[in-house]
Length: 339
Figure 1 (cartoon, rainbow, N blue to C red):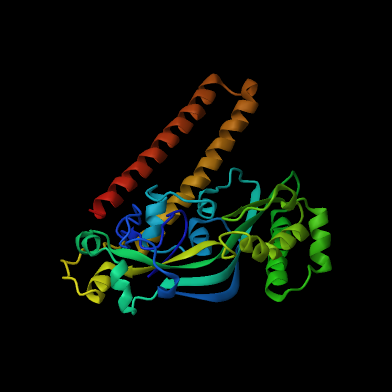
Figure 2 (cartoon, rainbow, N blue to C red):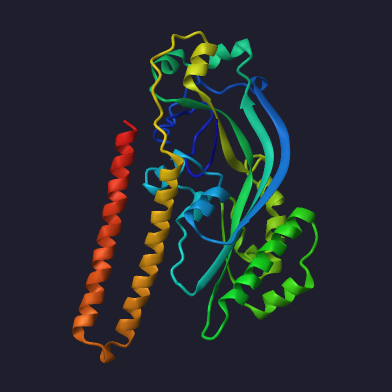
């Protein structure tokens, strides 16, 4: 079982509870495992993805998050790190057009070789036999990942479809440049000069201030530096991209410990997860509409009645209360399922 690193901060040997997608970093290892018992090999590779919407489904797909982990993130039960913070970004204006792409490089795989008999000396058998966790971290995939977002706020009289086409061309050209190693085409360069996009970079390896891009060409240049930025962290490995987990029962079998009664990991049905994602998307859309309507009324308050001003302020308060109530209820329901 593999899970993406979005903020768990787990070490080698850490116990993991797949019911709650949490770890207290209690380890089944006794001390540091010698390098001779760890498989370590270069795993060079890269992948690019881009999305044309900012729906939660698309954002989860970019970060390879699936199943219960999606719901635990939405319910606020999993705290995200720099890489996972892309999930918390939301549009704040109906006039905003935003597209994003991720660029991920892999550098090295490190994994404990459980086949070595000598590993028995480094396993805390008492912890392994008594733990209520479902898995333990037995390896890492190292590398680096950045999510770059391109955003533009429509001005009066501008065509939304034309701007979307320009944004899509810019993002697709960046992806093509990285996939094929080529340069931006002339059309993209001209379009990026005519339209001033806003750029945001989210990742576990952050560029220096003077490396932060202000143009589409700058984004390509920064992403091409990602391998170098990764080599500057953790002895050239970068940061943890993926945790490689082994089930506790498999480990007990390997080290000839008595199996316990299997704890059932309750999984939420895919159609229910999709409905929850849609609800969160709808919340964002309705919050934007209501906030913009409120701002318009307040801006022209001298032309509307005091009753209308009070009504829109009340609508905002009620919406905020209902949003918090829904999220609180979701959290309680998910927690109850995990018991």
